[in-house]
Amino acid sequence: MVHVAFPPGYNGRLRMRLPLLVLLACASFPAAAQAPALAVPAPPVIAARAWVLHDFTSEQTLAARAAQARVEPASLTKLMTAYLVFSALKQKTLRADQRVPVSQRAWKAEGSRMFIAPDRPVTVDELVRGVVVHSGNDASIALAEAVSGGEEAFAQAMNREAQRLGMKDTHFVNATGLPHPQHYSTAHDLALLAVALIRDFPEYYPLYSQKQFRYHNVTQSNRNRLLWSDPTVDGVKTGYTENAGYCLVSSARRGGRRLVAVVLGAASDAARAAESQKLLNHGFQAYDGVRLYAGGDVVTTIRVWKGAGNEVKAGFSRDLHLALPKGGAGRLRASVDSLQPLLAPVRAGQRVGTLKLTIENRAYGEFPVVALQDVPLAGIFGRGWDAIRLFFQ
View 1 (cartoon, rainbow, N blue to C red):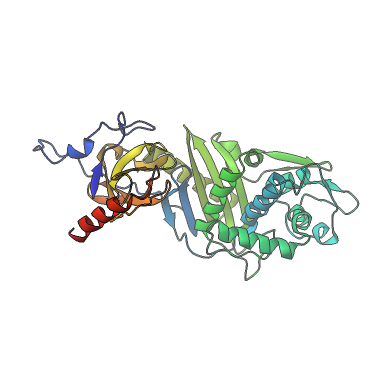
View 2: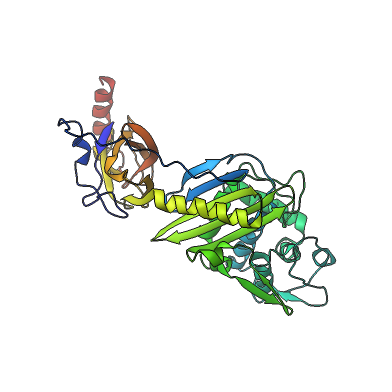
């Protein structure tokens, strides 16, 4: 294990850094006054069956309850419907101005609707807004048919995408979220989906902040109340069925940080908004966002055997962000466990160790450390010499 320091200038604040060698500073001197132990922030009481609070940048779950419990996702299903449609638009297999015929199945869809009809061809752009703003079941089916030729084939594509995104406890049978025994998800999986949608389609995500949409002389409002009450909230989707209760996936951005909250099974429309607001406020008020290392920064050097060089520079291929309890950044300690013996050849991007973070001797997180450079094999004599040295180690 090798203790490592954070980059110069880090002081525990957002995007700032601790002094070099801070890791050595704690145990050497008798303390006249011991700092109080850092408590992990307790989340507020949330009146919902299941919920998750997720930090978008650090990819950490900050708080959760019943996050893995299978639930009926209701219209939160349409996050995946939109994800596949956005993917088709990005791949240019679908065009925003493309006119889509309306089938009898789409026209007769139950539940929330944008009121499309077979005698009125509608554009993909209108249908997308009908899904995002109106939560239209008719629009969802029409788009499923446009992308995959039918809702059943579209549901299969939804399941393939869910598996790719790591949604291990999710299964879809339709594009709408209408109840079915084999149609289910979890709060954890829905958080993964919302994060993926925001991350992968920044050009389309702003649609989720649209408060109203007018189609065929009918204006309907977005059911996400937080769009009106909190200017930092810019999405994402509501859902409701009698079994599912009132559900909301929401996201807010404040001061460069983004959080995603999933609240499932609240008692009312007002309750799902209030409970979501409590979660978002907790995440922003109780945690700081910190960039520990920039992508490409050298965190440590690791011994390499049988290589043209004896060491490899190690770090992260992209920025490493962390959400820390308020006041916790100054107490963070880091060490690297290297994968030994590390034998050449070593390729840039190859995992070579693990960064372990602790706060007051309590584990806080582990992150894979990768090689930042190639180390080719040494010649025959170099390899032989290292083989002898390894034998006696």
